[in-house]
Length: 543
Image 1 (cartoon, rainbow, N blue to C red):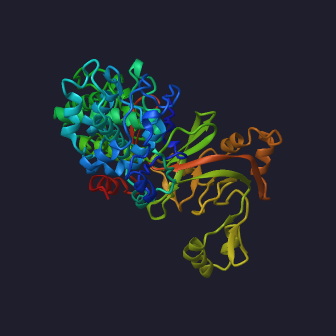
Image 2: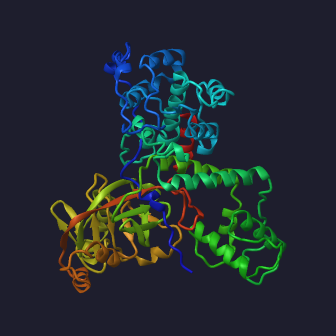
Image 3: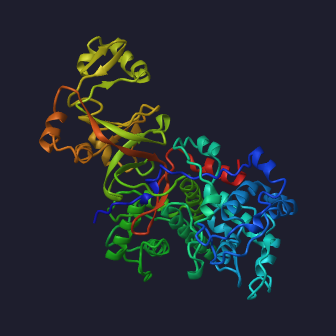
């Protein structure tokens, strides 16, 4: 059964990326030297103020408490600007207390911070012992306990620290080192805090400004860490080149155990016989690793099964970091290409409509990670040979054979060379343009055999699409003049034809080597551009 992986709006991501901008301006620093609201006691408490976490509208504190607090806890001073903005907007009413003491969501935050390792990051929690004693003190939740401004500010400061570290990820300079050219939209976490606890009376919880994919990866991170702690992840030692249905071997027992551990096999009965249930489990494993789903164990499958759990955990960690660079799930029609997956995902009305295989750039000419707006469909295109290819490949052949250009259906065009439209054109019958500084685009190809390979990094950087006609029909579906018959005619013409879309379509080119699909299964792919290890080093060196 053919399955279509859904990179979840994970990969579709790419329009609203989060980063924390919490640096306090000089003007703000000057304003905090004295009480920013000297008449705060006389303010009228408006119960309709957005962001009131508790139902109380009377409890408040003097704004000068912020300076006193940060003087005592200087490691939290980076959050001065956020604290001032947040509490000024609230007119200095308490967010974490009501007349009965601490509200429940404060505990949600506290336990998340205590379990910060679940985020897969080496995060230092400033003043953790003080924070713990404040929260766990016997009197903290006594009915009628007087609200404490120091405790209030400690909780909010810990929130801002947690949000910056766990949700923003590495700074944009680090993602640029990763050659991730999707811009990361800044977000003010003091504004986000207003909506963190939507309804304290019903036990509101911390709202993460991250795609669904982040929490899905986090869940699988926990599972793999638990499996690693069990200490029974044993390598397989094959005694033959392949194992298939009907075979009997002691190695099959190990294969069965391994697939049970990975969740591909529901029951491990310990049988040495390669039966139908094991065949289906192998196919599931192959699907998750982007292999041909034939149910046969070959060396490539054994190789993936024998990867240490620590390796898979690191894969999840680096892809959680990439997900931190993403924002909320995009809406409407959009396209996503995940480079390591060699897959194009077509989304219509927010949902995955269909997928197809793609060929991406080889390691020496990598496909860039960026976003764009698809604006043009070009039928029967010319291929303007890039200068590098012309100098390295075309001109040497032309020196050997003066008739070389005619033989490959090319011609001089100004000072360059282009290939005429036709069946042998390197771009095939159609290309899809989304203007960008990388000069990359989607296109057809006459070399269809490449789509049969599991690993499809063969191009000079542009992305070859296995179903270009279907993509053209999809993009022109709202333009009645472009019927299927007219599209077919344009694709088989010798005359280049540009079509400008009435509404451009967002395109995101991303790089994920681990993600969770729409069945809840973790998928892994090879790090074809050798980027995971470098990112892992950046995460743990904090550079």
